[in-house]
Length: 448
Ligand code: SF4
Ligand code: SF4
Image (cartoon, rainbow, N blue to C red):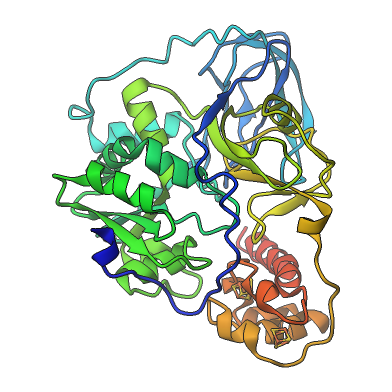
């Protein structure tokens, strides 16, 4: 049936090689950290204020126990995903290369659960405020990669009238397949999770957005949606970056999120599919956010697949549990190849926002050398945000941050499309990303 429905999309964009064939049909496999292993919890794995540790060295902790929190509104608490003993609290390298104060727990392998984990039969008796409080206390954040606290996203200011709640199952980054698998394997939970959100954001319609390269997920979700007239599966063209919020909102509603704005400015709230499952899990099973589905893939890994990992598991332990390497990876990228970050050390924990790790061979990692711009205009033609990457690059070369901001450089979504499409292999998005972050930090310090 979905094939007959109109296939929606946004303007411009690119069509990178999907590379999903290695893992898209591999069911999710649960990998538990072994007894005696260190499980590491950085106190900042979300956008917002860092948490403060609530435990101390030597303290025993249980699965689901809150170990860090903050009084700040834009923050999400952190819970232990194992039972064991707090070994140390000290700065540790994270998966994105930053050093963050971290709670290091020695896993006793028992997985003894904290008394706060309690099942619930229904959410009918819960008020909107109670649901938001449960989501906040569970430490749920955007699991698509952004890590924005979900209770904040689901609390738009009263003057913003929300009429569309969009569940994002596009997963447009090449190689990554966790969203595809959760949509196939947990479609009923996604629909119920969306119904819970629609109880919080009242008078809105629900959309579940999936690219048309995921037919099994579309079929499974359409079955799960049957009998829910307020929820619709929308099929989108397989195009990058279809899963970025502004492009997704535009494809479904034809509304343009304004420069410097966010989806709530045009009446939309967007949540990743796995975030919606996390909401379902905490409402019905009382479990805080303690696990993450991660695609481990690339030519250097022995068993490419989708793995359900306990948050805090070290990447090198996870690789070992998944069967190790078949060859030494030339390059390791956390996230997808378009927006991900290269890392040089696997002694880092899986956090709430880790969707995938690519272990690339020399051949896969090869990037041709940069050459002079041939003024073909391809980067301009494909930029999904309508920017002029060559102009931004010129501002960067002149070290003119003011001109970069004037030319809307802050609207760049760091999608990498300009670099990908450039025949001269100019490192446009990399340069733009660096200066954009500097200018954003300047703005933030000005606004206090
Ligand atoms: S990285 Fe920025 S400038 Fe380049 S295509 Fe994406 S949005 Fe446009
Ligand atoms: S795509 Fe590359 S070569 Fe073409 S105009 Fe842009 S920077 Fe120049």
